[in-house]
Length: 435
Image 1 (cartoon, rainbow, N blue to C red):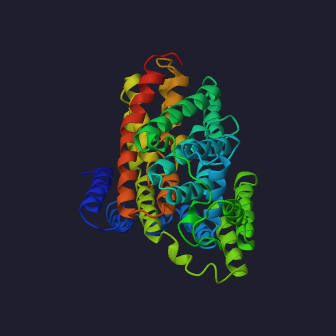
Image 2 (tube, helix red, strand yellow):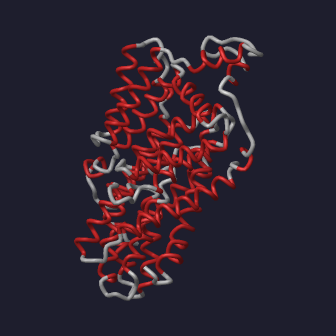
Image 3 (spheres, rainbow, N blue to C red):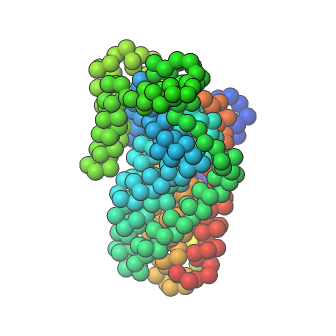
C-alpha cells in the first residue's frame, strides 16, 4: 500500500474515532502527524513542525482573548444593544446586517478571516443576548465574507486574476465576483430559512430589555413609564473601559484591513494593553480562550500539512487532471478544491487547483471562465468548516452553547456544503458552457 493511500485512510480513521469517542480530534491529528510523518513518509520532526499553523494559532488565541476581555467589561453587550437600537429593535434585520458588513469588508480588500474575526464575536454575542440561533448568525457572517471575497480589489480576486493572466486564459474577474456573490447570497437565504430566520419575523426587542431582567450597567429593577428613557440612556452610555475596547477594535480593524497587519498579533497586542490598563476587569479572560478549539484546529491543519509535504494532495490532484474527460475533470477538481479547502487555507488551494486546471482549459473543450469561477466558489464557500479559519472563529466565539454539539453541527453543515456546492457550481457554471 502506498504512503499516500495510508495517509488518506488515517485521515478517515481520525474522523471515525473522534466521532465515536470523546477524544479531541486535534490531539488525534497531532499523534497521526507524528506517526504517519515519521514512520510512513520518513519526515523529520522539523518537517512536521513546519505544517503547524502558527498564524492560525495566534489568530484564535488573540481574537478569543480580546473578546473575552470585551465580554468581561461589557463592551460586547453594549455593542449588541446599539445594533438592536439601530434597527429599531427589528431582530430579523441583524443577521443580514452582519452578512452585509462582512461582504463589504472583504469586497474592499479585507482577507476573509480578518473580516470574520472582527464581525463574528459581535454577531455571536448578539445571538447569545437575544436568543437567536448562533449557527444562523455565525454562518451568515462567514458566507457574507465569502460573498464579497472575489471583488477585483480583494485578496482572493487578486490571486485568481494573477493565475489567469499568467496562463493566458480569458479575463474572468467580474464573472467570478458575481458568481461568488450570487452563490453565497443564495446559501445565506437558505440558511436564514432553515436555521430560525423565519421565527424572527415580527420580533422586536428594546435596548432596555437587559435592565428589565435584573442588574445591568448600574440599572436595577423593572423600568416603567417615564423611567424607560433614562434607563435606555444609562444602558447605552459606555464606560471608560468600553470606550477603550472599541478603540482597540477599531485599531484591529484598521490594522488588518488597511495596513494588512497580522490579525493575531494585533488582537493580542490590543488585549494585553487593555489588560494592563484595567487588570481587574481582565481577570479570568485567559481562561476563556477556547483552548479545546485551538487544539482541534491546529492539530488537523498540521496533519494536512504532512499530507502536503509527503505529496498526497498533489498526487491526487495530478491523477484527476489526467483523466482525459474535461467535464469530469472539472467536476473532480471542484471537489478536490472544496475538500482540501475545508481543512486548509483557501488561498493556498486557489493557488494550487487553478494551475492544475490550466492544461485542459487551454485545449478549449470547456469554458475556461466557467471552470475557474466554479473552482473559485467551490474552494471558498466551504470555509464554514470548523477546520478552516473562518469556521474555527465561529466555533471559538459561540456563547452559551454545548461546544461539542455546536462543533458537530458545523461539521455536518460543512460536509453538506462540500458535497453539494461543487456539484451545483459545476451544473450552473461549467456544464452549460455559457461562460
